[in-house]
Image: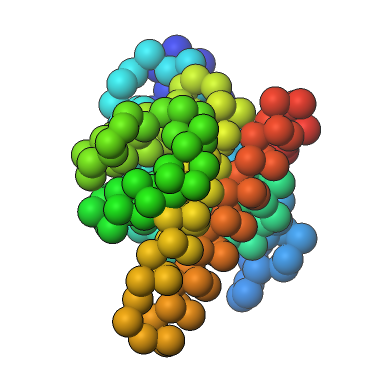
Length: 210
């Protein structure tokens, strides 16, 4: 790490150019795993405690500037209960919310009717609108790097679980069987993501998320 007290942010991929050059073609699974863990830890450590707000904002909008595919190359194959796996799911959820705010807020509202207590854990005001849900996800992602990772992952998990329940409710109102099945599959994936983020939050709290 540089000695500069306000380190400059770097995208994950170039953090380990020497290691990356060792890969002649498709990356070796073990090496890819190591790169994923190293890049996630370096990104987290590089931002945590930074006094430069631009560094934080660049991490917040990393997907917009670098693309989700770059992170997928490093992190998407990691288990949910690892740091790169948890950060990957956090970024995917954040991207979904940013791009589909109206749809997400509708699903979120429906979910609060089933599990209203989770709304307080997620930290979203009632009734949630598009900007409130987007702002909450920005706060969660920012908090993962600058505040408390376990709390951030737990809040993200609550958002996903609420949206899962809301999606399941909305599936019953779809006009065709195919649409109902598609929404049900989405609800299942959201629930899995929420449970995975919640499990990662518990591990982060215990200091075993690495």
